[in-house]
Length: 487
Image (cartoon, one colour):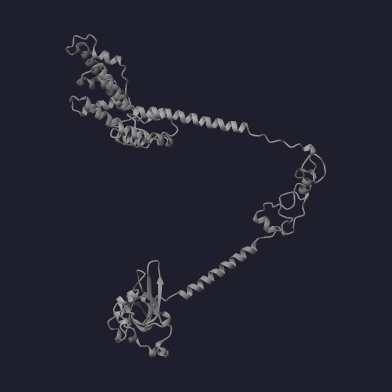
């Protein structure tokens, strides 16, 4: 504790000594006048007469920048020399700012600091770059909003960090115009102004005209409301009630009718039920009208014998859900495919036919076919199987992915149909594709457009029946299969 107090006392003595040295130097400058005996008033007195402000720390973002600009203006007014500006200005630093100056002067190793270097270091420390960027962004996004034109002009004045956006008159006019209200921009954008002052003056005049027009519109609306035709009140002394025949009220206001509605308790049996147990109201109270729903929790409802529970609907909903789930399950079971095969199983192999045609800019492909069945010899990895292929399919590699296989549900040896299967009827390539070729032309037809007539041919393809024939363009068929037209 004693060491801390000694340190504080030492720092205070050092600061006091520095201030005394600064005052002594300023007094010497004032007494000597730097050889200028023509002016009896000293520069120090002239500078003090400008009432320079004392800067301690930054309370607002632009306090440091404002102090620096004010101090520079006062130094110029007092006629202080360039090499004396730092000495005069730093005399009015106090608190944290004084501590910063002591540290900055120590880092400068006793060398004389110019006024330009002082301004640069002072601004860099007390006005950080992040704050300048924030002010620049706020300046770019500034709009008039609810401010008047004069208030908006003062708020949009150039500040530190925005010299590149307000360095010319055109940029300042454009920036000011973009922040005005839309109705003012629409009129002022087409008028060439000589400078910013002329633009501001026109905006102020237009603001007054718009304000006057709004006031006139409000005044006209108030006059229209005051001049509205008053609604005449009906004299009920001549009105006779259709319900009771008494003079002085309408039938919907009849006391007898209202009393009858209030005492009507003849509700349908399906809508009105009397609760005998579990109720929290007096049964003989005349204020308890029939046909009303009273709140009751689950425990009270279970104990009350006359309360109808809504369990029947819940049971029906559950039955519907079970039916829907079973329907989805049956559909999924039909679509289900075996994803694993055992050694010795028989499977079909998926092959894809190709026509080699371009119909409507899309390559024409027919539905896939399955050939086989073939016996599974072994399993290769997790999703591949080796099949026993006939000699006619020697060009095809005998290991296939599981997505190309479909299980044969009948054993070939026990089915007479498989004995007559001829694998040579389909010429399969090494990539599990086979080429479809046209056999004959079944029909001809024309499709007429606005500019021309296109001829189409109904073609029967190999390995397909007449019902599977497709319509193709004649010009495409002649280009791909010229032999079809030679016969």
